[in-house]
Amino acid sequence: MVFLNERPMHPYEIARLMRQRGKEHSIKINYGSLYTVVQNLEKHGFVTAVGVQREGNRPERTLYGLTDEGRTEMHDWLADMVAVPSREYPAFESALSLLMALHPDEAAELLAERARAQEVQAAALRGVLTMLDGELPRIFVLETEFQAHMREAEVTWVRSLLKELDEGTVSGAAEWREWHETGRVPEQWAVLEDELRDSGTASDLLERLKGNTD
Image (cartoon, rainbow, N blue to C red; front, side, top):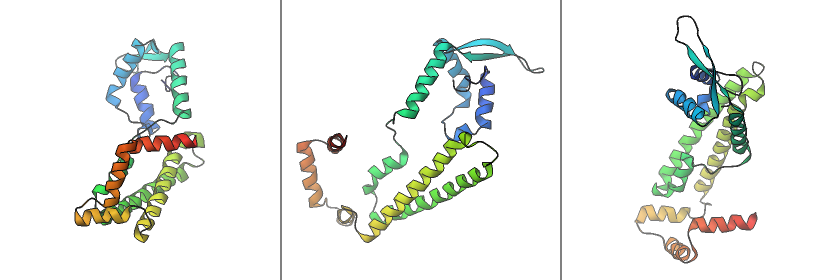
């Protein structure tokens, strides 16, 4: 709908523009389903056929434009996406929540490997931004700039965590190693599990703590 807000288009043109503008790097796109998506939007009254386009010997293509309802829906959806943080489930965050299943030494090696990979990707994004500087207005590359910043921030955090793991200053790290090397659940963890069983889950505890800071 955002693309149709620019001008009426047919689904093939929408796909072409998305590729041309590199939107697949920031939006999960299934190009083959665009026609179905447009049909569903039409069914809900958000877009409507406004004409046909014929290029050379190619078949006629239906041009679609936003309705007033579609323009309102697009605005409200995008405004909500920008203003309201949503709960997302990044793969790396999920992996961190399960990190203790790996031996501490292996986890440190893998985290260092990830940091190196993210540094390479961040440098590549910075290179793209440098090449585009002066070619495109900054407003057209904000998502690339954001991606570079997020990778750099992640690298900084991972490097800091690795340093703390190496120095042994991360609370629970000694028990983590003990568990892997003895196969026995550390006593401190067993006590903590009993306490959580009586007071609620760890998620409940986090929610209560966040509530106290709001």
